[in-house]
View (cartoon, rainbow, N blue to C red):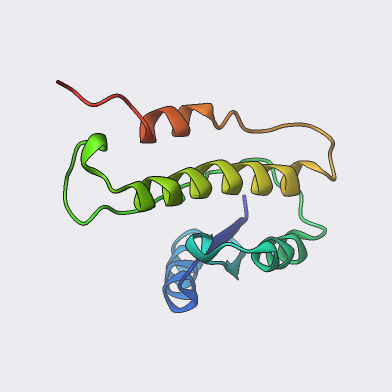
Length: 122
């Protein structure tokens, strides 16, 4: 199985790709995209990078690292909005891009959204 890695740091992506290629003898393509600064252009770059690729499995691990462990109600409104945009737009857009050539939906992204926005303990 070959891989396409998408992430914000091209140097880190290449390092991971090289490690996986040498360890598992798979072909790996990388696409640089910073979802925290998501505009239409990153989705155009992703679409171009995925052109003519048959995607069978999507592992989507986009998120935001909080400055320290905190309950959801302690997170600022601005960061909360960033999480909403990252999770909903990214999952919808990337899922749409990979399913267009085959016309089916591969990912139920509600699970990740529920995990990210789980109710805090009282």
